[in-house]
Image 1 (cartoon, rainbow, N blue to C red):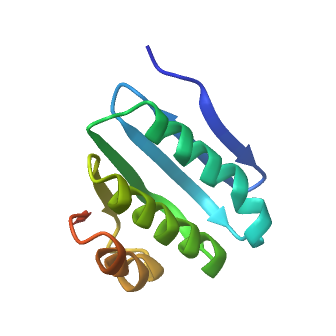
Image 2: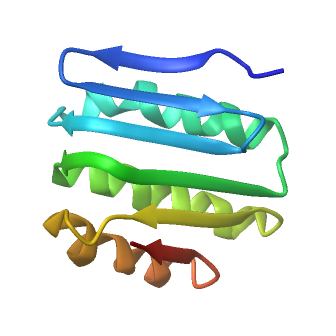
Length: 117
C-alpha cells in the first residue's frame, strides 16, 4: 500500500510512492532554504521506512534553485553516512540544470546511480 507522503503548492509537487520506492518531483521549485525543510522532512521519512533503494525521479522538475540543490546534496551526504540505501536519480536530458547539477551528487555519494534520458 502506498503511503500518502506528499507536498504540493502552486507550481510544484513532491511525493513518495512506496510501491516503487520513488520520490517524484514535478514543476518548478523556487523556495528559500527554510521552505525546503518540508521536502527534507519528507526525504527523512522515506529513509525511515528503511528501503534498500530510493529513486528520485526528477524528470518532470523544470527548475530547482540553489537551495533545493543543496537540499539534495545534504540528502546524499546523509545516505552516504548510513551506507545501506542505494540512491538512483532519474534525470532528463531536456532540462538544462539537471545535467549540470545532478552529476555533482557523486561528489557527496559516489555510489549514486544517475540515469538520464
